[in-house]
Length: 280
Image 1: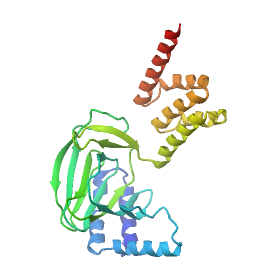
Image 2: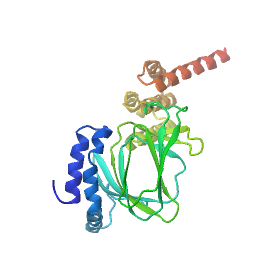
Image 3: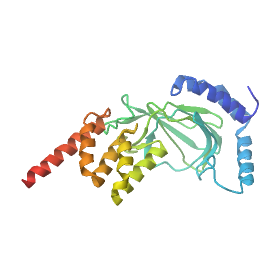
Image 4: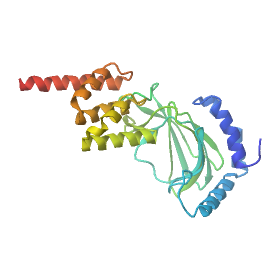
């Protein structure tokens, strides 16, 4: 094992990548994470970011940050960064990533751990799903806390000045993150974890608005996209462009592998038939 931050990250990623999505395997990187913490090797990574920014003349890159997150390293296996925490977020979020974190600066950090009251299929949104509070803690500096992304949500905030944590997380092993109401702890909505898919959804909305026949073959291809919400968005878009082809796509959607698409197709067909009957 090498001595530097990036050497240790590479060793951790080799462990994570041996069984992607497995929380027990992910937990085996704890000793590596501890060494990075104890030797404060994240400072090496921050210095490296500064030098790269200087070398690049200030241009933004995929490894740069926003005001709350500084990305130290990202890859198809994991992401390492420093987060700044202050006030609580609007909602509670359960995302399909495993995380390992530790306080590195500041104090008064509060970590509330929530668990789903029943097993979740993250690909099928369930508005009856709820979270329950399972643990409250105020970790000391250097104290490690983890999150199992299959059923846990962490609410990390402060009751005083800002605090910073070092965090490593796996890449997402499901398509959606779920938001839960902070007061009722009930599921509110799901959102796409994949930025490309999210962007595709926005593009389809634009194509539906401009209604160009030139888009028909491209939209038709997206009706076979791996993400179910993109498949359904493609059908909705096609309805604005070519109704005849949209009807064929809608009929195919009755046999879609995802229950949300099948249900939406049945509902749309029923509503269309009812509208036609009212005109007769």
